[in-house]
Structures are given as structure tokens and as C-alpha cells.
Length: 133
Image (cartoon, rainbow, N blue to C red; front, side, top):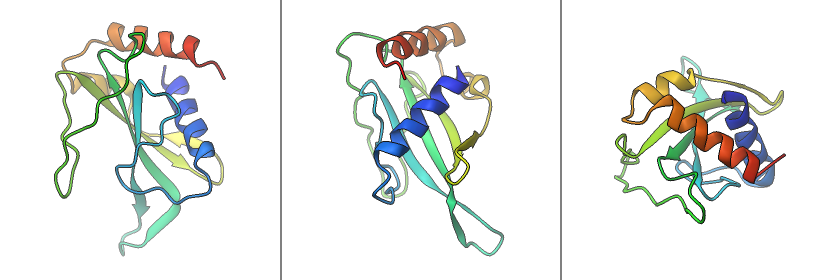
């Protein structure tokens, strides 16, 4: 499942290649999920590495439903209000030059929500068939 999600992130980035992403901006090519730019990696001096980008991938419990559009998040001045009862938030780090992805295990992100692994797996499978490469 992680490889499928990473592919969605890479495809979404490639569609938005002309612009530097804004934090919180949804760049998802799949309307049922949200892929939001979360920032750049920083070194010990706080210098941002524009090659190393973080994306938050939100999958809602209804993301597999026909005609579902991912709902907007409530926001504060510094953060998005996450809805762990309704969605998971999986972080994907992308090395732009190499196209390699990394980040926490999807299972760890699922465990921080009220959703079940089988439910997320079913949603990812549905969306992967709905939006093939």
C-alpha cells in the first residue's frame, strides 16, 4: 500500500512541477484524498533543503466511496486540524532529484487514528483501480 501512496505523491508532484508548493496546499491528482505539502527538510542551522520535501497524505474513511470529494480541513494560523476519527494522515518524504520516497510506516500512521488497517487497504485498492498509472 505504501508504494501506491508514494506513487500518488510523485504523480501529484509531477503535475505541479512548475510551482514551488505552499505549505498546506492540496496538490492531489485524486479528489478523494488530500496530498498537502508539509515543508522542507532543514539542517541543524535551520537552512531548508528544497530537494527534500514532506507531504501529508490524508485518507478519509469515505475516500473509497463513489463521487466522494475530500472535505476541507479546519485550519489555525499554524496547523491543519486533523480528524483522527475520520481519516489517517500518512507522511511521505520525497527526494525531488532522485524521486525516492521515505517516511514512517503506514501502519504507524493508521494506529494514530480510529480507522482500521483493513479499511485503509480497501480504500487504497479501490482508488488504485479507479486511478491506474
